[in-house]
Image (tube, rainbow, N blue to C red; front, side, top):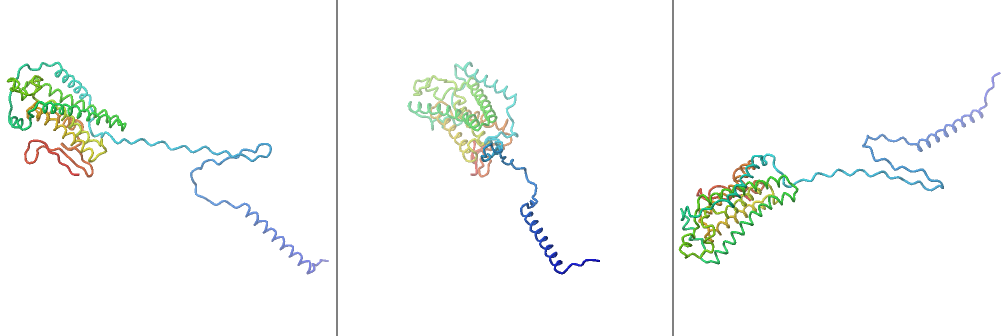
Length: 347
C-alpha cells in the first residue's frame, strides 16, 4: 500500500529547499566579490620589474623591499657646431698645398735675399700722382713720423685680426676642419701678395716721392735713405688690403660673428682700416697714389678674389653676405665711373 505525505510535510520540504537556494546564492555572491575578474586592457610596453619582497628573517621582522635598478639615461645628443663647412665649396687641394709652400718660400727668398736696385729705374709721378701728393703729404717731420707709425701699426693689426678670426673663432666652436681651411686660405693669400710685392720692388726700382728733395738736401723726410727705390707698389697697403679681403671673404661665407650685420661690419671695418693705411702712406710721403692703388689691388685680389675663385665658388662674384634681412656686395665702379669699388647692401 502506497504511503501519502501530509500537507505539513510538503510545506516543510519547500521551506527547506528555499533556505538551501538562498544560502547557495549568498555563498556565490561573496565568492565573486572576493575574486573579481581582471578587466581586459590593451597591450603596453613592458614596465620596470616590480619591487620584490625578501623573505622575513627569523624573529618576525617586517620584510624589506628591494627597489628595481634605475632606467638607463638617454644617450647625449651630438653637439651642433655653429661653423660648418659647406661641402659644395672646394677644400684645400694637394696642388694648392704645393703652390702655397713654393710661393711662400719664394716670397721670403726674394724679400730677404733678393738684390734690391742700387739706382732708380723709375723716377717721378704719373697720371694723377702729383696733385694727390700735394693734397695729402705732411710737411713737418713730426707729422711724417706719426703717419709712418700709424700705417705700420695698421699693417700689423689687420693681419693679426684676420688670423685670429680665421683660427681662434673656429677653434672656440671646435670646428677644426673650418679652422684648417680658413688658415690655409690665409697662408695662400699672404704668400701670393708677398711674392708679387717683393718682386715688383726689385724689377721696377721706383724712387720714393721725396727722392729729388733728398738728393738736394732740402727734404725733411726722416726716411730719405730707407728703401729709396722701393716705392712701387705700396707693401703696407698690400698687406692691409690682403687682410681686409680675407675678412670679407670669410665673414661672407661663414657666420664668424653669428651672421647678419656683425659680419658685414667686420668686412667694412677691414676695408676702412686698410684704406686708412694707404692714406697714411700718402701722408707720410712714402708712396705715390699709383703705388697705393696698385698695392691695394694686389692685396684685395689675393685676400678676396683668390678664396672666392678657388673655394667659395658657390657665392656670386662680389657678394659678401646673403642672409635673411641682410644682403651686401662689393661691386666694380664707384657711382657713375667704372673706376674703384663700391659697397652696396640692404639691411
